[in-house]
Amino acid sequence: MNAAAKCSRRKLLPDRMWCKDVRHLDQLVAATGKPAYLDAERGRLRKEQQKLEKELQSLKGQLDNQQFLSKAPPAVVSSLRQRQEECSAQLDKVLESLRKLG
Image (cartoon, rainbow, N blue to C red; front, side, top):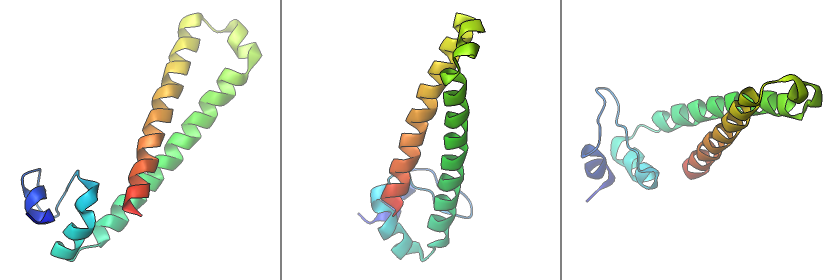
C-alpha cells in the first residue's frame, strides 16, 4: 500500500493531504508532488519551537527567582512547575517532529 493510500484512511483536508505518520511523508510528497506542505509544516514547527522556548525561559526566570518563590502562594509555584514540565514535553515533541521532517 502506498503512502497516499495509507494516509487516505486518515483525515484528508480539502486542498491538501494531511498525514500523521511522518515515516511516509517522503513517499507522500513523491506521490503528490507537493513538497511545499513540508516546508510549511517545518515553518509551523519552528514557530512553535520558538514560542515554547520563550515560554520556558520566562518560566525558568520566575522559578529561579528566590524572592518570587518566597512570596508566591504554593499553588502558583506548583502550577508554574507543572506548566514548565508541559512546555518541556511539548518542545520535545516539536523537536522530534522537526528531526523526522529533516
